[in-house]
Amino acid sequence: MDKRTITGKKAKSRMKIMHAAKYLCEKNGIENVTFHDIAKEADVCRTTVFNHFSTTDQLMIALFCQEIEDIDQYCSEINCSGMAMIEAVFDKLIEDTAYYPVLTYKIASSTILRGGVEDNSLIYIEKMIAENLPAPYRQQAALYTVATMGAYYGLVNHYHSLNKTFDADQMKEEFHQLLELIFGGREQ
Amino acid sequence: MDKRTITGKKAKSRMKIMHAAKYLCEKNGIENVTFHDIAKEADVCRTTVFNHFSTTDQLMIALFCQEIEDIDQYCSEINCSGMAMIEAVFDKLIEDTAYYPVLTYKIASSTILRGGVEDNSLIYIEKMIAENLPAPYRQQAALYTVATMGAYYGLVNHYHSLNKTFDADQMKEEFHQLLELIFGGREQ
Image (tube, rainbow over all chains, first blue to last red; front, side, top):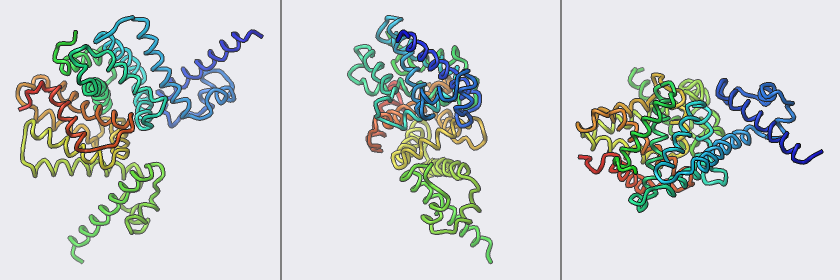
């Protein structure tokens, strides 16, 4: 059998499992999703799920890494830099967050608390911001990076706290206003 | 027996339990703390713990409400308003966060995700900010409130992500720099 075929099949079932897991976690809450449910939703055997992910934690980490990979892929496709890149990345992140608000929050929280380990993808985003800061802000890169990440956290937590509906377009507009506050309207 | 004495005793044992719970949760992780451990640490019977809190969730909510009550008490004592009040409240919040970083994070997360319920103390802090914003910022109160809360979240998450030591003085200084970014150095 062609190796590529196996790889393709494996990648496909992995993707099906991850899609099913995302869907079920958001619908029923992470705590209420079993590997049995995921297998049923993804239309694969339960052992197939275990072959890909031996624990729920591993699956959660994979979901978050996938999100970061998607963002990374997106970055290379849009082919921009500077403030435009920062805005594009957060637009994408906000869209995904609005699609899976509770799941994104829980995965981000567990990533934040795991702190400093290799798969900590939030560090990747912080790095991306620091690298794309326009020249006038680079002397205080750490400060502007924390402020930018904070704008995202502040917005998302505000929506959760008040039980507001996660409307991606509305949130993106508010995020841009927050960036204007932080960068004093001198974003370009 | 004098009613006040009972109230006093009850309040005292409640306080002992909450102190013990905070200490143990930070030391061993929330997941690894039982009511038995808390009773032992607080030097009270296990039933006494159950009389005060029937579930771990209730205890966690009580801890967070206590934090907000402490902040509220502190606000009325320092007797200031406007930007000085906002700064004082976050200085206190950062001090407490630096003392119990993981616990504060977990309690805040569960409060954020419970969203919109009565005991959601984060809404209290957002309200306090909105009420104390200096006049020039009041027209965009929601935006400045989210940005200010975001500065706190961004800072705390940055420390967790990078496994940095939670140094309250350092964090307060950085938080003030973030406020300067947001309020354009026109804080007074």
